[in-house]
Amino acid sequence: MGTVGLILSNRQSLHFHHHISQGSLCGSDHVPLTLKITTNPISIPSPPIPDYRSTNWEDFKATLTDIHEPRQLDDQLYI
Image 1 (cartoon, rainbow, N blue to C red):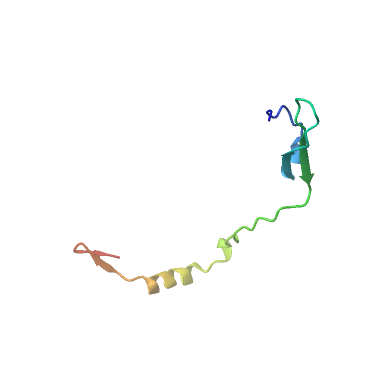
Image 2: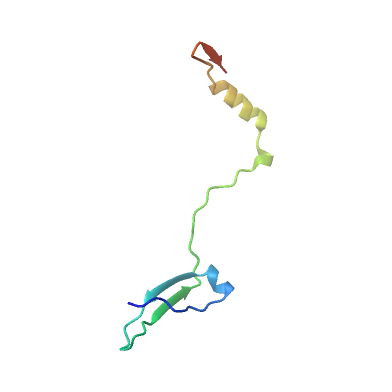
């Protein structure tokens, strides 16, 4: 099998889903390539973005204070 010589594209096609595969042999020393491009979007789930402006920071601090337990480690009190 030979190496890929050249695939031409433009910047707009970089955003599309594409698949490159080897085409059928054509009886010479060249191996054709098949480039399939689809404009169907690929859904990639992303985590929700926190809304820090509407966060109740006083409640957040109170919750942290309620669940925090001071611990004694190596004869030192860690808070």
